[in-house]
Length: 224
Image 1 (tube, rainbow, N blue to C red):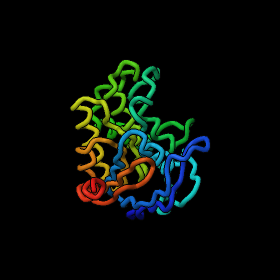
Image 2: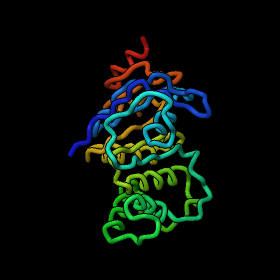
Image 3: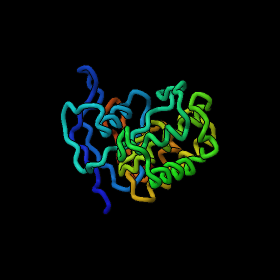
C-alpha cells in the first residue's frame, strides 16, 4: 500500500536553543523524489534530521510518516574513513533494523545485502575495508546500507557532493530506482542539475521555505 504524503506544518527546529528552521510548511509527496535545495546554512541538514527523528521539534507538526524508521545517509565528510569493517559488513548493518544486533542474518537478509551492493556497483569491493576506499566508494557503501534497511522513507544529505562522475551516476541511478519501487526519497542538494532530476522541490533559505513545487516551477518562483 502506498504510504501517505508527509505534511510539514509550522516547523521550528534547531540546536542548543538556536533556531535553524522557522515556520517550515511543505508537503513531501509519497513515492517520489523531493529535492531540498538551498545554499549551505539554509537548514537542509536540520530538516532531514527532523524527518529522521534525530533532531527535536521546537514547534509545528509532521503528519503522514509511517511507523518504519527512516533510513538516513549523512554527508560523505561525516562518514569515518577509518572504520575497520568491510563493505559487506557495512551494508549488512542495514539489516539490524529487522534482525537486531545479535541475531544472525538469514539467507533472505544476505540476498538483500547482495542486491543492494549490486545496485551501487560495489559487489567487487565486498571484502575491502572502508579505510581502503575512495570517498565515492565509501558513500556508495553507506547508501547501500540505507537501501538494505528497506525503509519507506530514504533521507540523503548531499549524497553526491564532491564525488567523481561515476559515483554520482551510480547514486543518481540508485535514487531513481528505489523511488520507482514506491519509496519516498528526500535529498538535500545545492546542485541545480540534481534538483531538476527530482519530482518535487522545496527551496530553503535562512531556514525558511521560499518556494515549493515541480522543480522548474519552484526555481522560477524562488528567483522572483
